[in-house]
Image 1 (cartoon, rainbow, N blue to C red):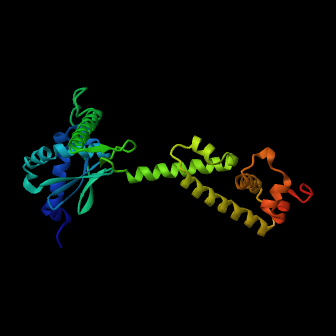
Image 2: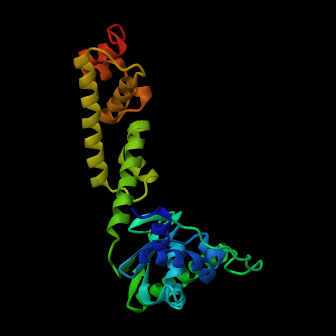
Length: 279
């Protein structure tokens, strides 16, 4: 039987593990402490070194420096040409793994001087955002040169005369919500009064929202009649008042119990206010 001491002397770490430790030991020296604190190698597979970064800004910034980082890694004798490219991914990393996970323990070196971009990641982030801003400015100039205009709401470029579908849909939905609110709060003001308060409201849309609102309110009152009870917060009474005012076009001071009973019917009126009010 071979002695343990002899077996340990003959054992050598796998080539992948040696490559892993070579990347770990040289990473901070190559990219600097500031970058190393935010960009950590995670996995090396098929020549691609996966590096996890905490944000899209870091990924955008490192994409510009990837060729020089790869060249510096390949200049390390124990790494050589086994690292071909970087694969940048969003995430948090505490270790590098090749096959199985292994501990990642980079070597320390003295901190860079104050103000050095390697010491202050915010400088790299600011540079990334400035490059991104310049890129969008170039895109905007190119779009305008080809006769396209930016949507005033979202900034998407469209051909002249086209409507931004998503923004138009949002404006229509906002118009519908505002119309529904005024139909509930002041149903007697009619189309003219509502259109004065809701920009962009036309009569066809007002009539459509009014019909749908009356239908929805009536279904709520019918459910209360079937149950024979109203909700604890009494919302059916508020809806019934708005329903009668919207249906009749009368202001609250002109509405009488007789008119309300005639529009709602005896059962719903008695359920909401009792039988004595309109007798």
